Image (cartoon, rainbow over all chains, first blue to last red; front, side, top):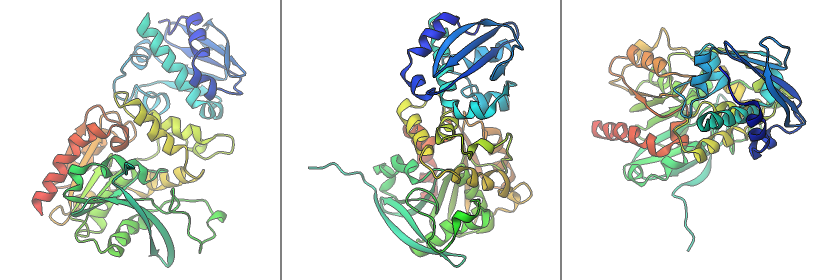
Length: 126
Length: 283
């Protein structure tokens, strides 16, 4: 499952005013992995500098893994209960895993939420 | 002419375990006293919509207070609180509304709380039977042990934005965006260690697993209401609490999260009005 078109995600997130505020000073690489595909998001100074399809298991600051159906539920326009949130909802109740630098994820949790919010919008439009 | 909110605020001095606390509360309405307890790391602002509800205020005197160490209830001057880690205990937490009710000379008040306040509603019914005519547990449970590492809820390199983000994620996606954001905003304003310290009660000190069955609902009626999207104190957990207590009622609130009164006050009103009407009818 392709989670988002990389070019559209990069453009959409970089144009999102809330992401730009929440992601200030952020440098990190995110690997968002489904059963079949991986999306690599490279953030430099609070903007997505590069976004591309990657390989599952590539080193990243933060890696989020979930089955295809989990991602589909998480990225639905109106998520079902507990799919509305990554750490509390999806990780605790729906089998998502998060690995890597959890301090960084915590510090930039709002930015991460905006990234996912843009992904939801893009899926609705596609 | 200026348009005023219905609520008015003032301070009252409460002495608990020999320490004097200056406690802030806001109130509106007249009738049966209804004490309103906020969630962990938050404050009485969460109840502002209920305080403004004139239908409720016709029959109830609503009193929303800030727990000591929260918002306008600053830490007590007589304690060197800065030398120890803040942790909310069940014993102290229960004494706050009980002492406040006595200080305000409230006659057979009703208690309603959310999250830690929801847990407290059940604890008050258990440990202070009859002090409150009814206890309304919003997002309460028998127990809610921590399911993850809480380190970053109080960490020098993680700002209050994290707590706000986590709390935004526990609201329901159907709730009005402005109120979801306001709910999270309140969480961005607490003292750095207070939210995590409140979770000591939420995760550790509150455990009614072997005690809930002792609650006597003829002395304190117990109502449990849980939002469908609450991944922390889930509907299943709320139902388990109500099931343990003979005479307790339980209701899931579809399309609501962990903060019904602040994230979607119009929807919450649909669920809380019948409960308040029933309590009033029971006298």
